[in-house]
Image (tube, rainbow, N blue to C red; front, side, top):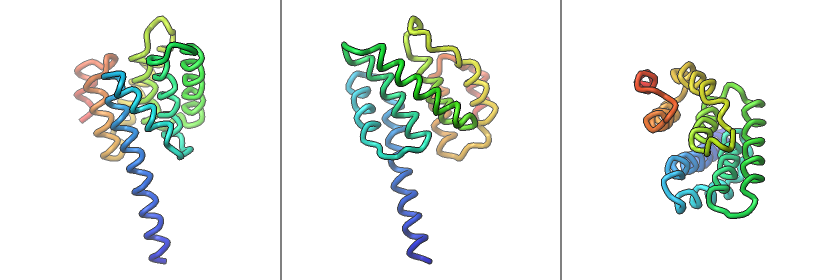
Length: 158
């Protein structure tokens, strides 16, 4: 029994460190081309197929369009379609909404992928209190730099 518990704990910690690496890299991805490339590389190496990992992979595909010269439209379309499908299948996952909101805030408006900003903002604010401490910290960091949230909304995430 202890062996099974030890295995499950080790598995959880291993998975959590991968998720932390994805989150940390994603936070920095928009600050430079090198950070974007680093995030894409980390996302591509992820073997998990859970919704959150898949959403970060979809975001990486969208971000790849910033640094390549060919197939930009196809990358954005593929990534956005994947992200929308993941959210449709997991509508109550706050982290997925944070990912989509950050993508939509940072993608050029001409692309036309920004219709969910208000919806995601309200969902994040309404469900913030039910999240674990690590995700709350991540959401606060995102909100601090968010272009969609005003000061009062940012302050409500305490």
